[in-house]
Each structure stands twice: as C-alpha cells, then as structure tokens.
Image 1 (spheres, helix red, strand yellow):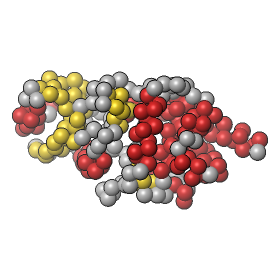
Image 2 (cartoon, rainbow, N blue to C red):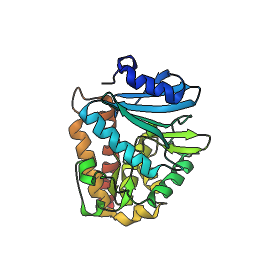
Image 3 (cartoon, rainbow, N blue to C red):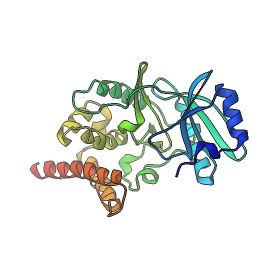
Image 4 (tube, one colour):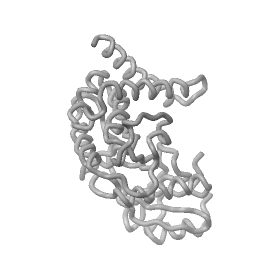
Length: 262
C-alpha cells in the first residue's frame, strides 16, 4: 500500500523542496513498486519522484535506480537526482508528459514502440545484478537465456508518448535474457490492445529476434506463461490477473491450434 506524502519525515520533504523549488504533489494513478510515487512540481520544473522506506521497497527502488542510470537515454527517463535520509531512499526521475501508448492495430504509437524495441534489442544488459528469466517469469527454457536488457512489462501503463518520442518507464523488473523474450511478453499487450493473436505475431515477426526463438520455443513460452496466469487468476484475485490470464490464454490457444494444423 502506498504511503501518504504527508507521512514523510520533514527531512525528506525539505530535501525534495530544496531540489525542486516547491512541493505541489500529484500522486501517481498506477503502479505499486514504490511506497511513494508522485509528480512533484516547483520552480525548477517537474520531477517524477519515487521513495521507499521498507527493506523490500528500498531494495527494489535501489535496483530500479541502478538500472535506470545504466540505460538512461532516448527511450528511458533520465535520473535527475537521488538521496537517502531519515531511512528513506528518494529518486527524482525526468518527468514524462503525455498519454499512455495506444497499442491498437494501425495506431501510430506502434511505430514509436518499434523504434524503442530496436534500440533495446541492441542494448546489452548492464552489470547491475539483473533478474534471470526464471526469477522474473517463474518458468524457464534454455533459449530464454541471453545478454540483452529486457524490460519485461511493456504494457501501455509503462509507455508514455511525449513530444520527444516514446519513453519506457518503471524498470523495476528488468531482466537479462534473450532479445526475443521481450517480444514474447509483448504479445499479451498487443492482444490486449485489440490485435488478434495472429495479428500480434505478424507485427512481432518484423523483428529478427522473433525468428531466433523457433516455433517450439514460442509454443513452450506461451503455454507456460498462460498456465502461470491461469493459476494466479483465482476468485478474489485482482482484475488485472484475470485480464492477463485471458490474454496469455488467447495466445497459447492460438499457438496450439496453429501447431495442430502443421
């Protein structure tokens, strides 16, 4: 659960005000990887601030900070500053202004996403203790191993279309894996955006990494991912878990049917 901004120690809020020149706070509407996540506005402009106090929260945010510093560039928000005081780790990121990406068929945002994927596919994983494919996804296959930086959560909530292009936010679950793993995870979000599984695969097939996996490997990935989310989508589970069970299930069913025809 998120901590209310008013509950922060004075030492933390004073440091933020000194850096931003004010403290007009707008809490983030989505995400849960930090105890505080908000846009802070002052005379120095806007920053997107994340802060954590619990042992788990600090470890997670410190990991995200190290990854973000390593990949900060054209498609990832820059780290403006960070500090620790009164038991809190606080990170100020470049504020990204704009709507979340539209992943529906024929959306112009897909071209922006394609440019970002091309850049990520060429980005070697930084030496910052990234997650393994099994550690991130809960299942494994030898073909999933690799040296590429994989965000692993390129849903619309983490894709912001700014006037300077697409920005990928929230690197808290960054993983070291084969480049095709990013594309395989993206299939569920394309289906969620209105693509049929066939259309999603046709879009993903434009990237060379997609062909590196092979049909059997993609079949295995789709089946294991669908089984994972089906097991999580129990009565009383959050709606988003049921949504992912549905989306991953659609892709796995499509691959099973396609395999039966060959």
